Image (cartoon, rainbow, N blue to C red; front, side, top):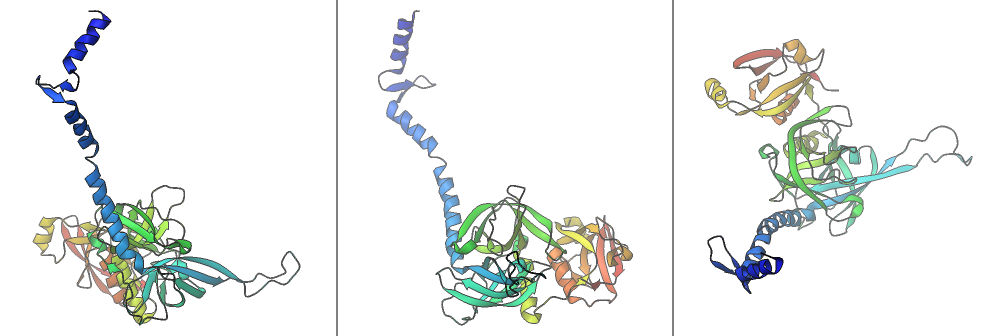
Length: 369
């Protein structure tokens, strides 16, 4: 068969406006094109659902997000400037970040490193209003701080809804919202990359149970909320690793709730310390039933400092802490909470699971420095 005969045979098979299907029947050309259009548009509902979730969360959260402008005093060095003029002892350094209103009376949650040692703070609301603010409490150990704007009795103030960071799952969609440099509602979206990370705070203390996400954090987003698809705050954006791509961190909102309550009550947090690094882990169901444990989660010890109370008590890496002084420990957040409540220098009972054995150890917490 020559080329012309092959071409005429192909034309005969497909006809003027149809195709031969696998069963030998004819498929109309319009139906064929519609099938292609249907296939190419099959992802549209999925994209619409994702976009709807993100935009809905942003619309609910954005009115409570604020920009924070900070002025910090710069200590004058001895001598004179290059021009020969005396240096100005009142020189200030300008910085800032983000935050969000979390109570109806105008309290704002942000990072400690944003407002630490600030001499003046100005807050810009989502509607453009700018006003001064004061620090209520600052905790560098957890990199959290609470500030207040003056007009706290203003009606109609938008307040962020707080979620539960212990219910987060790896792969869950999260949205980072901030107001860097006064830009309204800068938004990035991603997923929870990992849970139970440790991050060293600006005070040198390790912050445990940190959320890792690939939702990009830009300079100025520190202190802004990390929210789930329902618009509930699940974390406070705190840091990013600059040489890496897609590695950002947020402090769990459960930790933030506890720290904020203590800052409001005392203005500071006095912590006990036993010298362990830990992560939240689920307990085997059989172990929970056998020992009749009140919680199905615990805090596994992943590191012990030398010459620490935990080391002297005989704690080992891999032990799972399930109670301290009779109070259940369902994770790192609970361990921090109980350690804060326990008095320094008092002999305490520490309940741990070592493999399948339940042990009672005696530990004497020290005051965290």
